[in-house]
Image (tube, rainbow, N blue to C red; front, side):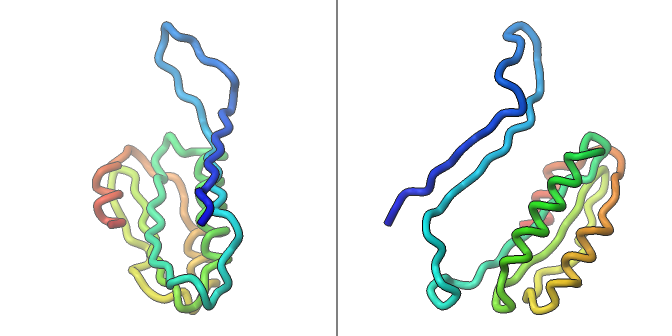
Length: 127
């Protein structure tokens, strides 16, 4: 079995070494040739999306696009849930089979920005 290839692409090449800074990074994981639908076990994914004020603009849009792409390749035998968090945590879709993909995608499109960040509580609810 081949080892996965992990690629990280930073939004810029350098930062200041004497100040705290933030860089957006795209992480790509290539697991090698895709197993046929009959070969892979069913997936059970929890999509936990930060919708706090710091996610305004392209960040939230990219998170929704990534979750939408993952859902678009899931099978009806797979399961998923959608949880969002800002200062509060809301589970928009409880864990269920992905038999109605459009329902999941419509729910993702309805996510809007919120306020502060309850990061740990969001992760905990997603788990």
